[in-house]
Length: 243
Ligand SMILES: NC(=O)c1ccc[n+]([C@@H]2O[C@H](COP(=O)([O-])OP(=O)(O)OC[C@H]3O[C@@H](n4cnc5c(N)ncnc54)[C@H](OP(=O)(O)O)[C@@H]3O)[C@@H](O)[C@H]2O)c1
Image (cartoon, rainbow, N blue to C red; front, top):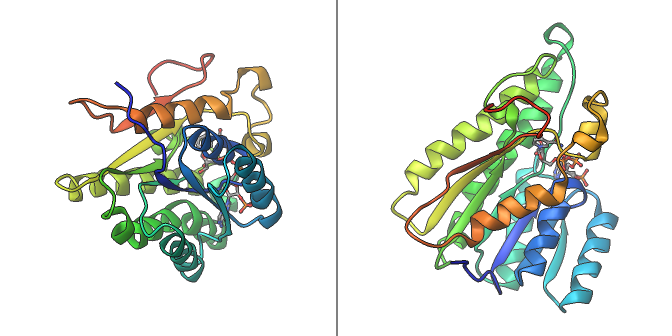
């Protein structure tokens, strides 16, 4: 059984490239209205135009900095004005850093936490009213393999992804008797600019494709029946089993 996502309203953060762009395109193909959020206006508008060519008036580009509370409020005001409700929130915006502990500054730590953890927290909190108007709503938080384990030289990034995953587990419990489900996706290495910047050592042809992550997100959102999937972990086939 597959749930119909047509006319659902979804926000995807970090939609300007990589995994967020792939998720946005898959949601659009499934007939959802997609609100594209990231800082790069041109990339968002280009993607919105691409989606709107497939189906008119279904994508909205809203330049957003998830580190800014005001920017998040503007994003949600745009959704309220346009659709008056929301069914799907994908917290995907993220940044990374490869630096040993001794060289990780307080500013590095704050910058990563502000986007990867606090940004998602703010979006969850500020979206609640809109999500409650949906028949069945989903929050999908994109954590990481380092939301489960830890990698050397990724102190701040690992902490932020653990924080995001931990918050998601607590939020799922808090919302268990409501219409809102909370899920976590933990990908291993994906073929995006982010991986290129911190793990150039991994052969490109071993990296998971962003479209594969998007497939798993759609699978989760379409899932019907008595069972619920809380978390999906996706590792590179060439990495060790069971992270
Ligand atoms: N690549 C991997 O191997 C991997 C593995 C596990 C988890 N992840 C997670 O997956 C998510 C997407 O990563 P990716 O690989 O697709 O990375 P990416 O290609 O670097 O894309 C990151 C996205 O986040 C956006 N972003 C960054 N800072 C932002 C901010 N302050 N406000 C709003 N948007 C912001 C960027 O857009 P702008 O620059 O336009 O703002 C961009 O769209 C991240 O959360 C990442 O941690 C990635």
